[in-house]
Length: 280
Image: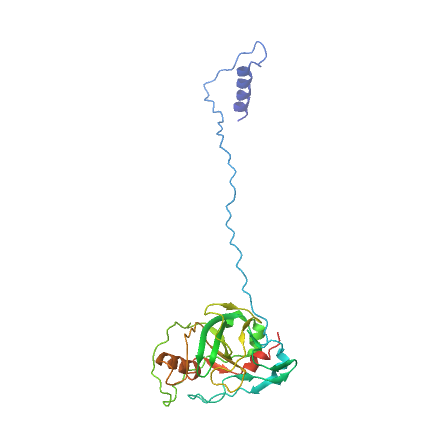
């Protein structure tokens, strides 16, 4: 190995003209293996942006608002004129909500025309125009998974219960709902009934907690101006075009919707004051 290195050095010196004078380049039959080098091109590759955009954190509702302007949640029990009363299974009795009314309160002579406010963020899913018994009414849906766990713990909603067959005395014809209900998600539904005027909002409109959605009136099955507030939990996706009790003026579709909503237990009823007593 040393001989090969020496020979290589001598060869380089003689080839470059730097060899001492008088010295001749050595000769050898040895095959000389000189190292070869290949220059590889150098590239700078910018790293591709493979980061996943952040997922937007869903907004969870943490607030409950009073349904009446000028009345705080704590004051509502003072103006209840009819309490909630759970109906019997298969029947349409009891009192499905809670009624609020007053005369000569604060600086007002009557609750008539008082602005009605949305209790929670949601979407308008049904608008009823002057039908018995709700009169002018609005139903607003709020998905359960949009409500904060803190509020849900206080609400203590019942687990899904089986539906029932309504009493035969309800002269109604079974049919099909014109909308598709979710099989996995549930929603809170709130009815605001006996509004003074037909709703000035439309199905599909989004409303926020505390937003005005109507005014207290005396329409439908009502003997004096008051707000009837009704709360239910059921499968998400309900979109009733109308509903009405069995009368000569109601259609078969309206009667079917009414029975599904009020009697079938598909949309489970609970006391609205449970919702209105929640501490955010």
